[in-house]
Length: 251
Image 1: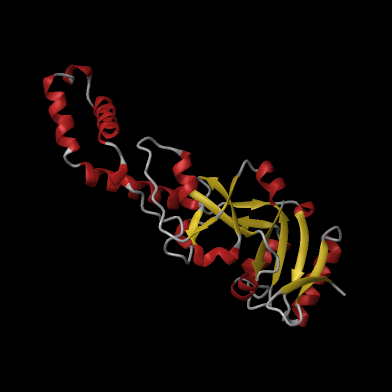
Image 2: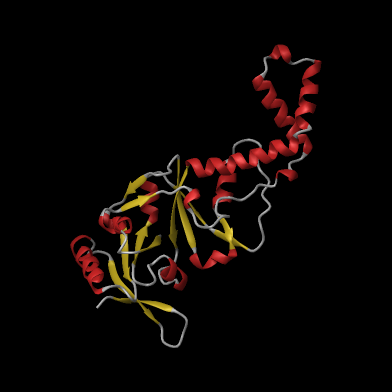
């Protein structure tokens, strides 16, 4: 499948996407949305019995069997009395670890989004690259997830043992206010700051913004002709008498 990245041709780093075929994996700390990958887990819903068993397993790892005596249960009860603070810290630890180690690359599923062209495509003066992300994540052992947009703050109960499902849920949920982005995410564990190269054949579409500078248009056209003749080249236009953008063949 094809995912779309909206870029500015004025920004040298944005040019790297087309010229050097580089995907830079960000930390969630770099995202503009304060809630993005920063969902607070609902530790209050963890059943007491499950938490007690978790505490016992943790304490047993820290203590030798010689200390498994009548006082062991007292130590468990003492730790249990601090359940709320402990689980709150556990929740914060999960989200902080995501920001430290999870490299994320964001794409859109649409190439004619009014919102994305306005905010990410340099105010319709940039370009949009359509990339076959199926090929990329297979070649580089990446994972991907389609973002879900929700109205209400999610109620996610944390797993007390490390669980990739928690990470997937946290990085895949955003406020419905962002649903126009139609986002899909590639992510790489321990991949923050990593750059992944992709092949020319992975480029399927190049779309020029409606208000792109003629010089920028020429530069992109020359690159397309030299490196990506297999990919479609098109531009964005306004569909008459509608609030819609359409993609038309380049001419």
